[in-house]
Image 1: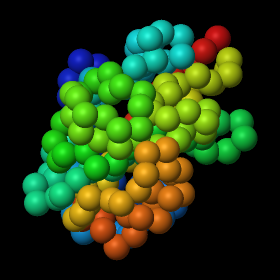
Image 2: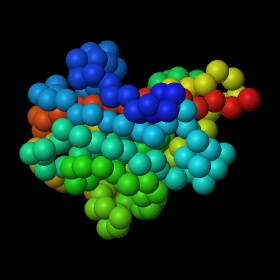
Image 3: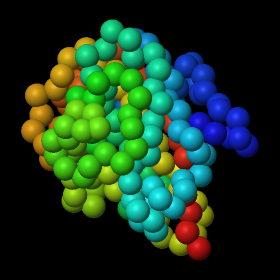
Image 4: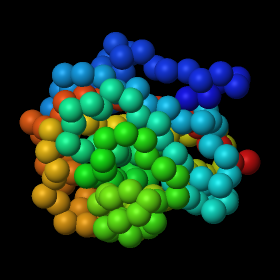
Length: 179
């Protein structure tokens, strides 16, 4: 993640503690992933105030994994945690920006996407009500298998399918607020 122009990696021990505190329902991770964004505050292009395209994620430490899964959510939403993105069966490694908003993605990478809490498939960026900035967590899981889930599956279905298959976990956090 970028902090004041310098790339910051969250420590692995911190990530495991955050995962436990966040109520991560997938099986406990055996390893740690590094997850990096180019920003600590969302640029408009990745939000409902801009083009609303998914950001690039740089992911390290997934060697030996069969696939990655990502859940992006906002724990500060007025009605409770709000899920913005559910994606799985990504090849281990970096995730390019601007994934198409469709269930089956063939390019620029192969992936399957589920429903967000807006009721749409694919990425839906930050769109908080005016007020204090919200935190957005990108929770990334390295898995030992490809998941047998249909496009459009829910977050709960993804979390259930991941149980017993998580090799490593990591996350990045960025904020966004509107006045």
